Image (cartoon, rainbow, N blue to C red; front, top):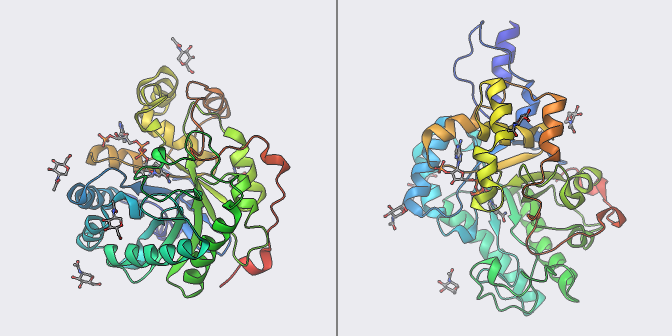
Length: 362
Ligand SMILES: NC(=O)c1ccc[n+]([C@@H]2O[C@H](COP(=O)([O-])OP(=O)(O)OC[C@H]3O[C@@H](n4cnc5c(N)ncnc54)[C@H](OP(=O)(O)O)[C@@H]3O)[C@@H](O)[C@H]2O)c1
Ligand SMILES: *[C@@H]1O[C@H](CO)[C@@H](O)[C@H](O)[C@H]1NC(C)=O
Ligand SMILES: *[C@@H]1O[C@H](CO)[C@@H](O)[C@H](O)[C@H]1NC(C)=O
Ligand SMILES: *[C@@H]1O[C@H](CO)[C@@H](O)[C@H](O)[C@H]1NC(C)=O
Ligand SMILES: *[C@@H]1O[C@H](CO)[C@@H](O)[C@H](O)[C@H]1NC(C)=O
Ligand SMILES: *[C@@H]1O[C@H](CO)[C@@H](O)[C@H](O)[C@H]1NC(C)=O
């Protein structure tokens, strides 16, 4: 009976277990495989990312990810592969409501959106939500994120955020026009949420200064997706503490360092490798486990079915306090920052206030 209940619960959670017999090892409590957002929506902890894939690779890896046990998919308008992702969803054979699908809209002034005026920003955001749904061939999305803080004044021609004028100075939320733009763009997401086109809404690469602009909003961002991986410390720039304080669920991207600082040490280094050995797990699995052990959800990516299977299989072991501590203290990627368009020098001074009674249900 207990096993039946456990298996039933686990089936609802982030990854499905391979087999669920009486002698299967005791998994961690099912709640650790998903996070509950402020509005009660359950979001699976592990998402299969799709960045940098073309349509055909996106389609293929998505099917492989679903077969490996992923039920959360992370994509975006500017990945230019949502048609392939949509085909993969269709071909995976999974009922729509058994998957959690996250997409994104570009920040205004970035990635082919102009941000000369607040009205333009609103119209283009509205268009991008419609295009996300259309390209994915879906009638609703589980989550839509504003991909980046706005870059007011930029004409949108910067295809990559690293080409926009806010990239070097990281001043994405300190332009005189930033707050107006952020509020305008957020109001469009809020409307789509209230119309039930989207079950939950959030942001990405937002510092506390960006979130402060949304103080007292009818609905406050439910998640903030930022860069976080071993080697950056467990609370870079105070982002995790800030999120916890304001009931925002932090979500990590590039858990393996995205080929930049630290990726070699994360995937092959002594620290993650030796900890993995003690548990019969790989360095990659330790890197993901470190993130979810901080109650932070994570978008990861692989086009290799064996890697996908391993990446989904991280809920049957526990890192000790000592292991967590040594992973927390690793500094080999301290050059990496949670956002590459803005920076938080003093997030604890933030004045964000939740209007929580309004943000609970819609
Ligand atoms: N909001 C944002 O601004 C933002 C920014 C970056 C990323 N993201 C999202 O987060 C997702 C993940 O981040 P990411 O794409 O930077 O990648 P990542 O997950 O940090 O790393 C992916 C790389 O790690 C390798 N890998 C994956 N699993 C492995 C394993 N078990 N063993 C060894 N190598 C492994 C993959 O190679 P193989 O394919 O060979 O396995 C790939 O080269 C993205 O796809 C995207 O959806 C969002
Ligand atoms: C998609 O990317 C893969 C891997 O890089 C490549 O082999 C394939 O030719 C690409 N497909 C298209 C249609 O460009
Ligand atoms: C940018 O937008 C224009 C007009 O909607 C479109 O024709 C063009 O293909 C877009 N470019 C990219 C890279 O998305
Ligand atoms: C879009 O989804 C519907 C089912 O919801 C399906 O019948 C149709 O074939 C899909 N279209 C494409 C182009 O995949
Ligand atoms: C490798 O890591 C383990 C565990 O963190 C540590 O005990 C050991 O001293 C490290 N070895 C080297 C050569 O750094
Ligand atoms: C994670 O969340 C659980 C349940 O809400 C809580 O008991 C635990 O203390 C949290 N762990 C951390 C490291 O924040």
